[in-house]
Image (cartoon, rainbow, N blue to C red; front, side, top):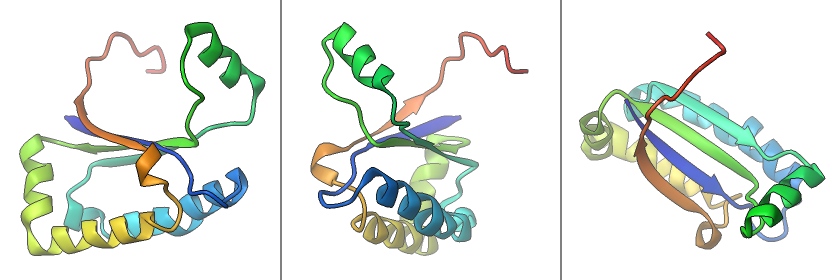
Length: 125
């Protein structure tokens, strides 16, 4: 499987709470509606929690401050993702999601990449 990882920063003027609420209660249902058109297999939102540990971890490594959350979306293959993006229904669905993201994401400070996972261990199974 391949995975899209989207490291997200909220738009200026949105509190963390407003950002997380919109992302979870407004945007997520829109993703759920178009799951078949975009051919995604899994969609996860990881909301950054308010803890001093985040700043301490970043500082201990000399990193910049953290983000407001991370989205992960899985596809079986890169070809499935590319097919969703070029299929008229998938392209329209992805366009709709992008337009909605403009309501809560600061694109200039966010990052998006396609990755391939290499599981080292999973003790949750």
